Length: 309
Image (cartoon, rainbow, N blue to C red; front, side, top):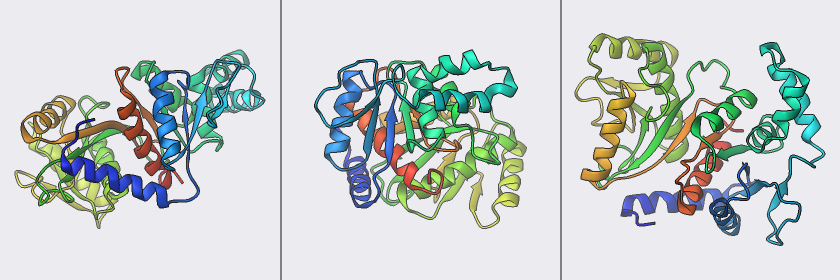
């Protein structure tokens, strides 16, 4: 992986933080038979960053020291089915639905996290975003009081005078297409928490202007009523001191973060989900072992934060 100096420095700081933290967080990988996932998991464990948990369909586990679970034979599968039925029964799920869900690797992994048998979930290397996120939402769900699950990227720029030593949270770049003022407020509050988690900086939120300025101002009023002490900025100067940038819609988010990458020499890591009750993240099906390694680290960092504890 070729990285800019700020990006390499950021990842090295994350590695050092995770190496110092105890106990190691158990991050479950539902696609544990994928060679890319296995390569990343071996590296994450070898660098003492987290405890990988692999979900497998194979009967014979390799002698690599990694923890594995097969949903077809695992003694916890019935417990997970019971939990799923209790959680989803009021929405029409039957006992048979619950049994089938508990035997699917994605759902099994998410149920491990939901029941406290793992601390975080990282899937999507071989499954679509829709299927991966649905499994996480059905089992884990959103944080109490959060109505909008969204996403963020970590942007590492060469300008260390901007953001937090050149680092920014950019949200939402993957989930909410055209957020309402209330949704923008949810995204902003979660982005502030993500900035604190990832950078250990005091969060400063910048709301980028929408085509309807009143929508941005309404979102700012909602944020200030919910978090009076949070530094929230709007208007043209909203990003000058911000380290958590909130975009008015998905199109502008994707245009800006890609331009910052391509023209500004930045590195972007993500997207990661925010607003979940416990850490759960989705990978691209084109993810490399390096991508999985980085997202695994950030998932573990989320698990060590207040959100995932």
